[in-house]
Image (cartoon, one colour):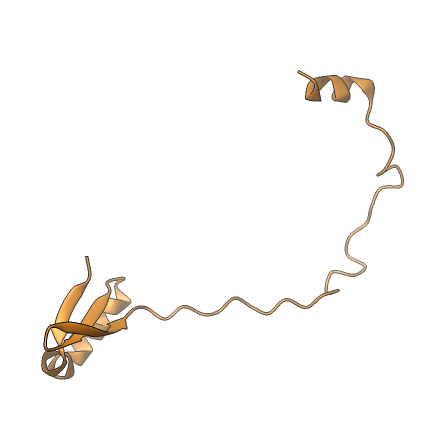
Length: 78
């Protein structure tokens, strides 16, 4: 459950609130009892993907599209 503090208390105890956020808690900052902001731990955005970056690193077997052996096909039909 997040902790809710008013703006004045948040200004006074900002370092303590940041320590709580770093430990995984969520802190809601309120003005006149109404939530106006939320402090949460910062998360790095995922790395950008670069199409084609694995080119030449993946090899397909020559028989990749060959039919499966009958024993394996039977396993799928159970």
